[in-house]
Image 1 (cartoon, one colour):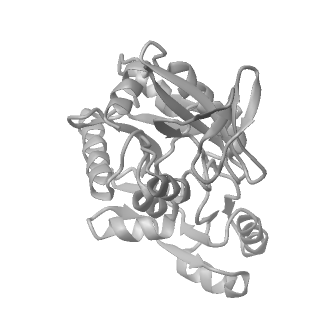
Image 2 (cartoon, one colour):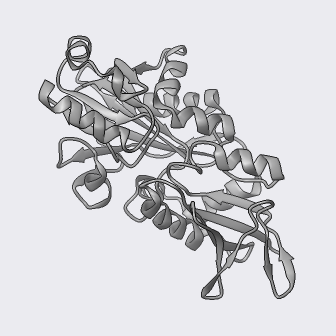
Length: 322
């Protein structure tokens, strides 16, 4: 009997629409000769499995559902949710509790990387360079002049625990700071303000094939906007070059650094790590993504094609391990 795989999308954040696209790509590329994939939607209002043109309610206590008077169980979960509860470790902790295997990074790795401030602080201990930053836990801590003195302009204001560039602003003046911070707080409970680093944005996709961590070809992102925001990511307002037009040495260095980060944090399955590289070839970490976008517009599918690989085969390698 084929193993039943729950491909989980939805979530509780602004990123739910992106997760649905990612789930469709994963669903379409799971080898149905080996597995039975099901689309499972997890939102605040309902947990349900899409089946036979309709939906069936999931039991939240054990992630089962009833069909034709039988209790149906999944053998494995594939989380594609961007944002909470799939990217921050909450769903992983739930699956650990009910003993349902999943292919993604575990609870600790997911919660750490979802917290940009904590993840960067952790990785700095291992020599990874990051932008200078300030963390705000509530709006009462806002002192624009102090922030400007410490970080300078321009700077970036972003939610500490979000993705897909929701709530991010590039701030150029003191007047813009309060509005940008308010915007970021609408997406999360904490806000990070980072110094601006001028450089090329490069990103590296990775996965573990059961024997070793594989780094996919590097992509360079050239945004038509001020930075790689939601519009640039998902509405065609950017140029994405894969493989990136960088030296072999730089490509190899980023791949090596990415593999090291993957191992140090204890990542599993697919991941993507984003960087800025200055004119002096200094490499700065932007963030680590444990549930990277997998829609047709996303970066990892492009990198898989560039590597001459098939996404279906990669997913099979990832699933077999679990």
